Length: 261
Image (cartoon, rainbow, N blue to C red; front, side, top):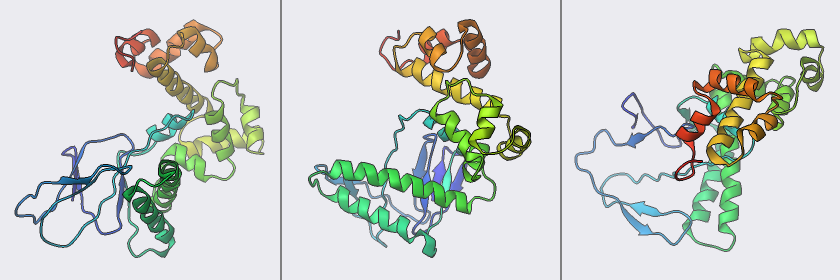
C-alpha cells in the first residue's frame, strides 16, 4: 500500500509504477505486517544506494528515483500532470518494453561501471517518456495540455509555444503550425485544451518567468523581454494576476540563492 500525505491510499500489485509529479510525500507499507524490520544500506559505491531489510515473507524489489527538468517549458508540462500517476504493467504485453527498461536500470545501478551515470541518465529519460505514454493510454480523461500533445495537429502549436514562449505568437502563426485555417484552429483548440491559445501562452510565459526569478540572477527587465513583453509594467500586472504577487516579491519568497537577491 502507498499512503499519499494521508489523503488517499493506493493498493499496489507486482509491476505497478507510481509517479509523483509534484513531489507529494508518501509512505509505503504492507497491510499485514506484524513487525517492522528496519532498512539498512548494503552498499553505497554504485550510482544509487542499495538497501534491504531482514524481514520474512515474499521478496519485493522496489526501484526509486527522481527526475529533474531544466528544459524550457518543462515545468508547464509537469504542472499539468495530476498529483499521482498510477500505471499498471502486470500482464500487459504492450508494457514489456517498460519492464525491460526498468531491468536495465536496475542492472546499471547495481555496479559502478564506466559510463554508468550517462547510461542511467538516458535510460531514465526513456523510462519517463514510456511511463507517460503508458499513462496516456490508460487514462480515461487527459488533462488539457496532454490532450493537446495527443492530438496530431494541435500538438504542433503546443510544441511551438513550449519551445519559444517569448515569441510574439499570433493565432495565424499557431494555426499555420497546425496546418489548419485560423477559424478551425480557434474553434478546435479550446474544445481539446479547455483553454484558449492566449491563456495557454500566458501561463507558459509566467511559469518560465517564475523559474528565472527563483533560479537565476536575471533582472526583471531581462525576464520581461525573454517572455515576450515589451512593457515591464504589463509584465508585472500579468505576473501578479498569475502568481498573486509581483515579480519582485515572488523572487524574494522563492529565490534558491542563499540570502535572496
